[in-house]
Length: 305
Image (cartoon, rainbow, N blue to C red; front, side, top):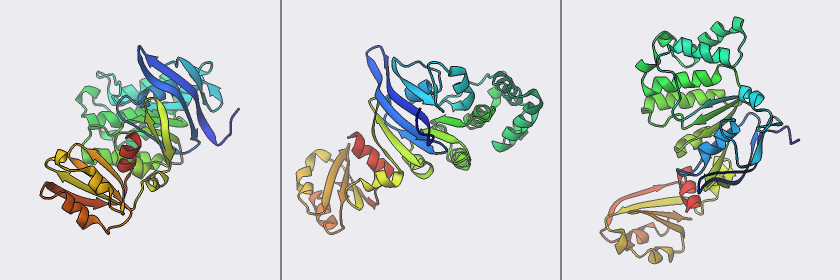
């Protein structure tokens, strides 16, 4: 048994694909009703972790408890509790939108006298009522994502898992889907895997940073950003980064940290006192200068580094 505060407990999870270790003794607890973001570089193990939690994959070892039910013995019950939207929803192209939702409603055992109302509710929710009788193969990526969300919600699951729900969408459609997810906060337990740091920052109650199959840091976005040393981030894009001696920058009293990414110097400062002097170190190599407060992207870069 585990605390009722947590609806999901991932315990010592390991998974390899050949010589590639996707999950390395992964441990994670997810609270009831929270929106947890999972961020990490490509190959960090995000999709593997959520596919195991959704009973799509089996781990090599370890366990996942969902509402005190084990993925090893209670797969059918767990699947009935989870709505999963993969990065590329596997939609049956020849189906009409309404027929697709009916198929999955019947598959998940939605009561027959409830199916039509449920389909209409979800089509309205994702603003697709006017396309209900159109075939999936006529839909744009954004419309497919909306129908994918409706499919994930058809059985009114307690837990919803979104894997890169806004990847490749135009800004307006991505905004609409983020607002839709925001509207579910508190009502459902949500796991959001994303590469967009601003998305995780604005939506999530907590964020877990996953790398090489392990959680390397976790907390609220505010807590994670507070761990960046300094109150100001100075970003300088330069023409010839090899001409710059980073040690000269580190010698300034206000400098907390220096990170170099290609031709971009990211400098954490505890005050503005030395900004002009730091800029002088770069002579005439500077292409652009920007100052900002620490963001979740800065946290991600520093943590992965």
